[in-house]
Amino acid sequence: MVKGLPAEWGTCLCTVSLNGSAQGLSYHNNTIALGSSGGDIIILNAITGSQTAVLSGHTFSVLSVAYSPDGVFLVSGGFDDTIKLWDMQTGGVVKTFYGHTDCVISVSVSADCTRIASGSRDYTIRLWNIQTGKYYCIINQEDSVNHISFSPTDPQHLLSICNGKVRQWDINGHQAGHAYGGSHVTFSSDGIQFALRHGQAVTVRNSSSGVIVTEFQTVNKFLRYCCFSPDGRLIAVTSGYTAYVWDITSSTPNLIETFTSEITSLVFSSPSSLISASVDGSIKFWKIGSSSKDPLKAPKSTLPTSANIGSITLQAKDGIIITSDSDGVVKTWDILTGLCKASFQTPAKGNCARDAQLINGKLIFCWFASKIDPWDSEKIKIWDAEKGKLLLEMYAGGCNDFRISEDGSRVFCLAGNSIQAWSIQTGESMGMVEAGSECFRPLTVDNSRVWVRSWFTKLTVMGWDFGTPGSSPVQLPETPPYKLHPNGIMLWDTGLHRIKDTIAGKVVFQLPRRYGKPEDVQWNGHYLVACFSTTKVLILDFSHILK
Image (tube, rainbow, N blue to C red; front, side, top):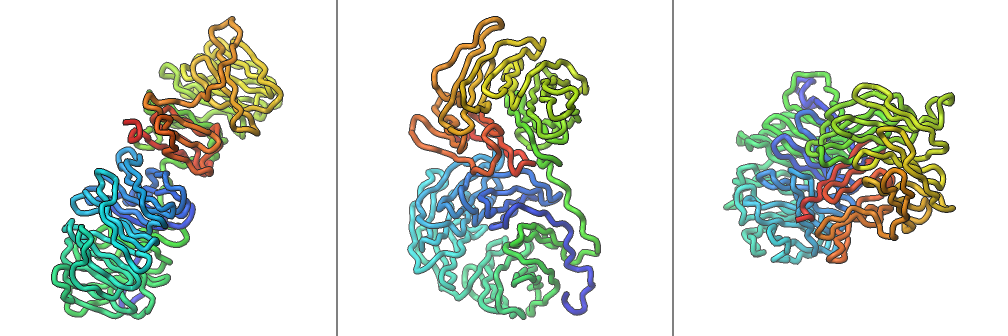
């Protein structure tokens, strides 16, 4: 603490822990975007600290994120050499920008939201047209470009850092004004000033003339990051495990605040509060001049559940996702907001086979009872989740997995190498087939058809049509049962969760392997849902590639 200041100043109000380290930080209108070492972008509510979304698309670490000035889009750059433009209403990737030959370290969006600037380890700055998705200018550098930043008010003006030099550029790639020594630079929110750090010094210059407005020395030689408060009165700088806040309104800047955390990124969320990202993956919310001595505990995200998720059901027609976990809790989630709509307790505790679906306005939940009650084993139980009432039960020896059909008329059970179907309404058998000598797992079902995939060979897929009650199941041609959109976009190779444009003949998206088991990933040609870290649900909207 700074000598003479009250001990409670610099209070950490809230801490949110993430999986992996935070690689980048951007803030807009009470929403925080964080790049992560795992390749995801985490979206947090800056008021509650709760996670509101996970954006997945980069295949490696996300190194930089930046909101567009209007908050409609988010831009990210990553270790996979790509830049992605995200629609913040849907969470979908609008465009992927290809051109860099090494990782993208920094990205920025112009004030008029028409251009993106990117800096890379391939020794180039690239300027991109957002509308076309193409770069129109390459500025070659002598080393990696560590930082790039558009003026927040002047779409013609940007700054870059390369090899310890801060340079100014126009949108045509021409250098404008002088170059300055510095290892980090940031604009004030009104674009009138920029601050750069070099060694122990922080210098504030006028953006137009380059004249020094103010300058101060810090006690630490290894400054890493600096940022202006929204009103331009304060500058926060970081060094190692400590962040310092300086008041620059007077001719002699004053150090007014310190707080401790190993910070990788820092941003003001108001004139008197900051948000920091740390190496350990934690996000901290700080209050300058706070009188509160006890840090507040961050509320839990709406998406994580208290136990491992056992099943996921996508019902886009009803705008919901249904999950059940090993504590027997069945929940419905709103697809658009990711918020929990309802929660119900069932007796289905443990790691048993399970599935759920909303049928004619009634939430029906099925589970296999062999691991729950040894005196009442080998039965599939059908449960009204909302009323907490057992509707039906049927014997199913050796069941290891099953699925409810999309129309809610059947439940398909996989027991060893056999597949059997029962009526949800009556519990009567609707046919059985032997799948062969291999061990299979359910892949997907629709109204009367079911496909299974080999446990060992992802390419071995078999399917049957159980038709109408009383008829024998008919084996289907060897056509993958993946959901195909009319324009040729389909889920392909479920072992790797790839989405392929069959017309163009290329993969347009691949879900990282850590997201759930193959049977926990569902796709309907528009949305893809998956189990993330066993206790969270990932929702991806692919409307942007279906147009």
